[in-house]
Length: 415
Image (cartoon, rainbow, N blue to C red):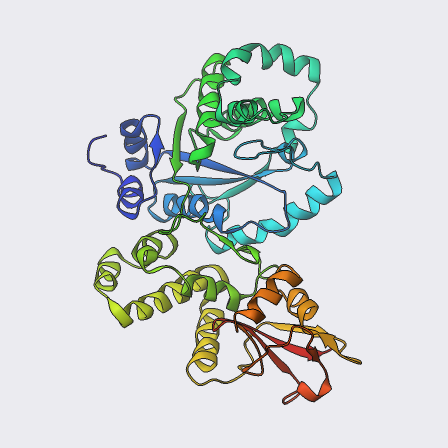
């Protein structure tokens, strides 16, 4: 594409958001005149989105922040009933309508941290594809929509091809997912004038299928596609995955302190990239931080952690998390801001099961190995016995500090 004229594409390009686009010059022109209406879809498979969704949420944020158009957050109340096979080796577990609705309600609040909702022309809006997918008549859908799809072409899509190449099952209900996602684009184009769908690079095939369906079904305006990269860390790990699971965005699933710690533990080679993608810091300030080397890189990581946490959880909680970390790591104190796990101590809690239930490990075997590696501490004292039992004698000021390595801590308090 030519050098971007719009603040939207200039920002996305400079910060590293762009992976693919269907017609970037046309998109740039629409953005320059403030005429983009863009959506990203989010299925309701869990009670929280995770950090893997954050790139596309930030794309919606920058669309609005640059004054280039209107963002739409599409809740997948309908498509979640089917399950997206993209990037999956096996069929997703089908969820009940009640579970999907509960997840949807829990997810909604995150978007208000990044977008401004309202009735204005560039205010964000939230819609649910169950509104048009749930009432569909199957025979009518096959006649009106299904006739535009080639099974031959569908079988070449990555979401289907990878399963079939590995001789893994692809259910008929999953095979229909790309039809529903494509139809979402058509409905939003008709209902809201939507002209851009954004998402991760794994969604490229589904998005361009929606563009093709819109053309076949008579959408009068041009439909566009834009994807962001699927991030890997500098060491090749999938972004947002940790030993204890996904990095959730809802505070009920992951505390502000643990969220701060995730960013604080960023690999050296990822700091500048993540500052561009996951904070609002100006690029000249990020360039200044990029010069940090050696021990100073830790200062840049703390800034990344605090700015990313402030964006999601607010400045007060971000500053509190930073102060808790300072007290814990620099002063050696059992800071009150650490995550808290409450349990009845009674006659004692076996250390293996306790650390798992407190979220410091995923299995007894993992904790046993950590003990063998001298990585488990109670009240800052190393534990070498996997049969150790935490009792009332371990309480210090009414709590017990549980530590895995130097950076992960939980306060045990009697229930």
